[in-house]
Image 1 (cartoon, rainbow, N blue to C red):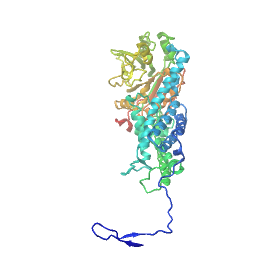
Image 2 (cartoon, rainbow, N blue to C red):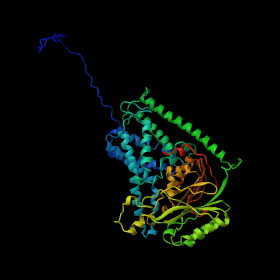
Image 3 (cartoon, one colour):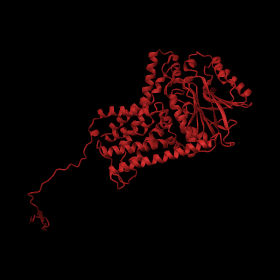
Length: 561
């Protein structure tokens, strides 16, 4: 090297060193991370993959009995979201995955066919059912699109620990929280007009040890654990496969690939603790409610009977059965059952709208003569129209107490936000809204039996945890749900409703009786065990015993959930 003296404006000498490089070899190193195989695929390639994986994931829904898919079925979605290069791609991937999932899990909507009772031919009826199915599946898949957008845009890093420098949020916790936000906060809201009958937690309704978590944090906690397992497996695949770029570095000093294995092991440890604790809880509940133990005032077994008349939608709406024939069928099934409580399904009184007092008067006579109480679903006239109600007929000469349905089915029992207005003829509107529309209850009324308060719900109200927990906080010591699923014929909807009923029983630590017109009717224990169930599409009587319990669970006391 040698020095030169450049001319400076202030006449100061600034030495500069010039190096002569002769044998220096310069290598070229890219600062861009290697692009994985999935990232090289176009969005046209990713969309069919997302749709197919969503269809497979749909098999985890109750009715298909592939419950274990819930623990791994979201991994493809999470990996595909991470491989997207733009927000619009993530939205489309989430939308197609959700559409595939909903097309499978909501296939019971096709059970609307046939619609001959509406005067539709078989071809028109099939098209109508297909249209409703596709529209509702697309509607609910919007939740998946929103989840995918948030999962793509949120700055997340691998592991369980947050950080004050971007990316801020831990992947293992952020994914479950975002899922619960869309599925349980938005998806169950009145504004979204959704009926969340196939939530992911319901897929575990037969895994009694796992669903005991519901008494601590509701079905949301069960779903949170399921999402943690999916997030851990997705993180493991992302870090070790090389198919997509790795997640941002962890906060802890563990190497990324090793950390992914550690996270999976941590989730496995959590599930092991949950399983053994849940097994202990199931055993404890069975021991506490056993009839062989000395009885107390809180543990008196109450014999009940659910009357399943199997009055089809064609019988009800086309006038194939008169009010007298409906009354005769139910009277023959009731006979002189030696039970304390009779339960009849939704809308049985006034089901044909021909003679509303015929069956009701017979039930009052049975209650008085046989000294038993009767719970029957009925349509009650009010000033503004009609209400969908559950009437408790007392054994003594007392005024009946009536529970009025609070959460109506959009387009089935009311027109949301007046969407149809006056533009649609009244005749067409009556086809969309049962009976021209119902009026929801303004206040909660908990019917009181001689055995204790009854937490009543009608049809889809059983899929809303907050409604049922509110009744338990008001003193309900047994839960009764009456439903009429005849609208969807012999579809698998009855299995999804039963799965939701199982979670409501566990959440609140109560016996739950599910009384449906065409089945499945069932009695669910506080542990979630289905002690008895009827056959769908059959007439019969389901006889069992329940107990009016009074202890509350942590979830019941969480009024904000």
